Length: 357
Ligand SMILES: [Zn+2]
Image (cartoon, rainbow, N blue to C red):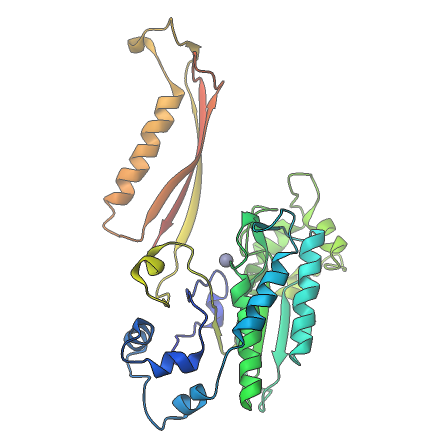
């Protein structure tokens, strides 16, 4: 298959957007009409619909068990702190721990050898004929932000397990080991740190250090929460999560599209060619409060209007960037004291900004 694989250095926050999980044989059969195939060919630079090629022959014998896959996605969604159809699964909570067991159990059923590291990244390996070679890995996350859907991340983990099952059913024997990875805490919900597990895998020492003193909104430390979930048993073993360079030959992630673009275009698959560099900026303004009916306009120093002007400036800046993929959002805007008859004396806004290469 001509998906582009990313090297292990880009382990964190890979967003390979593959929207519809369809059987590879279907993709190949409809090569000429299917925009999926056109996308893949354009990306790889060579035709993937070649008769007599090994890949085509292999693909024609592959078939995804979509019914079981959907059933598992539905089952996993029941490990949630909020009622269906929403899913809320926050790092190291009871439902997160139960969902982890569910994943490990499925990995075991697929005959994978399962291991976990000190923060709960979970690895299920199908050992290849040349086990000494660096494996090819795929995976994603199963933590879910409050009131999210059941597919985010999950498709990349359960889909990966099904992909292994598909290959096993076809009689395929891998030369390199193949591995499914479930990354711990892709979402920043609990500790404000996104891609926590994969950043540690990438060997970010400053993060390992910071995590020894990080607490959540209830003042529960990261290490205590990790221990309660059965991880981080030794006091200083976060650095044991670090991977050596070259630990993987390649990594690919299947992920739902989180925006509407492919869906609107009716394109069933997209392949990421660049990864956004996200940044967030918190801004506080202090002005002068006063009675909204009494202080005349020329004499005001309105912190709310300053925030509003900055929000509009963000929009203008992004629109003028010349990059259709660069986005800026003021998702939080708070005014103090927050009364209709009071001039805001303080304002707070948070700007999320993602710039694409
Ligand atoms: Zn995700």
